[in-house]
Length: 407
View 1 (tube, helix red, strand yellow):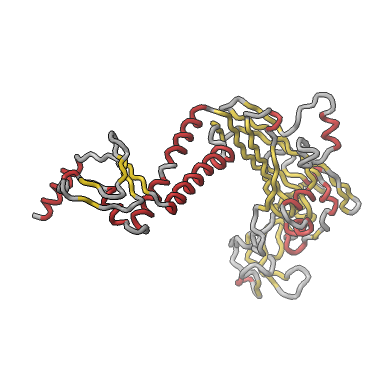
View 2 (cartoon, helix red, strand yellow):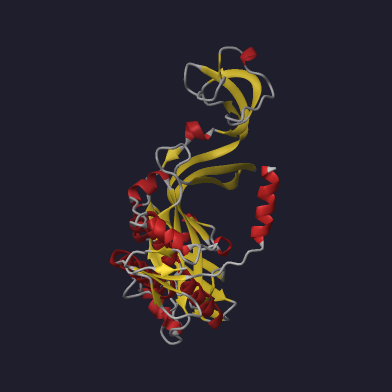
């Protein structure tokens, strides 16, 4: 029976109509809280939403862009002069470019058989039966022939393999780092297009007369040369808070972030990029830290193919472009203005909660705030209210109930 009454009361109450009633509570503490919250909400929307976040603008955050990179510089390696063809990968440029800072070189490799390196698991042996013919160890350097042979000029033996001989782990020569690489320069050309606003910008300021001459002499400076996207590798390492000598030893991946934040309500010349740099790879003594890659140079001698294997350590630059553009639009202005005006209503909710929870005589306030016309009291009854309590009824005159109200 109780469940049926609950369901009946719920559906009957669902059809009730609620209308607000205004009460004026003459309490200075509550009034200060109410005006303080109002001031905070209004200030927040004016300063943060409209001024800082530019909520009055229509925006675009996924622009189209292109990146072209080129590196320049020369360095001495013994008696040899190395230029960009020797140390830059890839040579055609793009949003990823790397430069070699140090090399480990294995000369005169050719196809044949030789001893496996002794650090490879199960490579050490004492007789041929210890080596399984045709087995390929993926931690090793080639396919085993089934023979146990002396390890080059040593007294111990390892399994023989078929591969490029001599193997890198045995015959590699470590070359010194390119100290001059700190002054290598990288040219980063970037164009960005905001299709919604039909705006195309570049990080090089158009200059028909002296443009190329200017780029041949300048280096990037945020204040003096913001339109000169030519960076020294030493400057990039410094901005990424990395030691260049450590990058020469282990290599590393550095992100070059180009940030376009354009207010299209201003002059187009104000739409210019800013640059930031950050190390992207993990570098806390992990086996995978740093950056290196291998490549080979092939040649023939007496009709036989040879190669020089090079393990290169260097800096890889990943160019990452972010863009945001905004322009005044009436639609977001109206939407955010209405949102701001609506949000002021939170002040009443907070003050009602304080009034009905913490202020003295909150039971009286609660009784007067929520009326139910199905429970109308006897007209002869009189309620005495607090002196700071006033009711405003819609459609009637302002009545002060400080002495009592006959209902």
